[in-house]
Length: 477
Image 1 (spheres, rainbow, N blue to C red):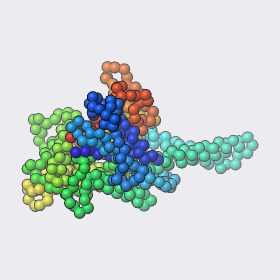
Image 2 (image 1 turned 135 degrees about the vertical axis):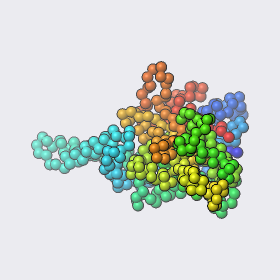
Image 3 (image 1 turned 180 degrees about the horizontal axis):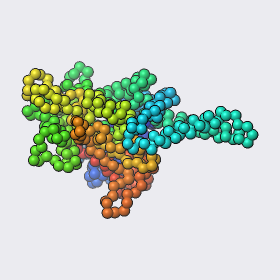
Image 4 (image 1 turned 30 degrees about the vertical axis):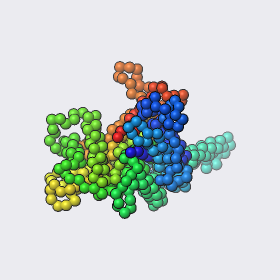
């Protein structure tokens, strides 16, 4: 069987195929661990220089701007197809009105509602706004004599700031403003983007409108998203899973899903621990992710079309979900409890008959009857890996990104557990006894799959690239 990798780009005026071409070069073409070195080149039958990839028509997206990238087969594994979910064209027409409405929401909020880590940026935004306002007012004052230059300076400053807003903030953060704010001006665009994304996944999973059994070309789908694309991807996965969660029932006595429910309850301290329970956080996440893989396989064997095995987020603003998706942290938690925003592990609900918490519900009255996963249980079957870059002084590292476990882990009362595997990259970690950590790169937000200039196959693989390759794990069957 083949596998599909769906790449979802971030904010800004992205060029079709630019993201997927550079991404596939880093995770496929230059990865010497995927195919043995003595295997001849699949295109020339000569000596291999890098792994082969072909551009083929993309009949799924129905866009003549896009191509499907097909790889040669790995040893013991079918080929991989890379698809780009391109949505930048659906955000055309962003105006200052869209941006200013979102900017007001950011500025006019209490300090207590500003997420940890964004305080300096929020203060800086206020200072820029105040300076711009003063400059604009000064430009309107008719100074006399030699003081005329104050009016000129104020006017020039206002023009420069306006140009910066138009060329940078509007083109990049304007996308954020339109997508995350559910105002009447934005709803149609949000709907169109999500609908096309869900359609792409359903086509890859071969989900038929009439409910007939799926016979997909792929046995696994990996969704990789960057920046604002991670919020887009999260929404697409949420809505796609909610459309098919009732396609299968599982028997509690034999279900891996029941084992996962018990494991989550133990991790939260809601059920008596067993002697062989994992003790540290890394072991907990490892066991949980193993069960996620096994639960998805179990669903597939029982007829479920859900084959999205992995969700990989790069430079994700979901770390600021309380800031972007909700009024504040309590509001975000409430929405998660109401299963509006899926968590990892999924939200549990109480079953009066079993006297226990489950991420599934009974299809018939009576204990021991078949169960179905509820509509927000997608992270019982899809593993979430988050890769971020710590920031310093706003512009060094990636202030947009950060851990997402504190936002999207499962919380019940004062107990919390996250099943999301998180990796910090750029700067590379170093042993405690060696030299101090290097300074984070300047604005590393756009560098998660970038190879250093001059890097060639055979050189040491940068830490952030090896982490990304391991997260995607193309050789996994």
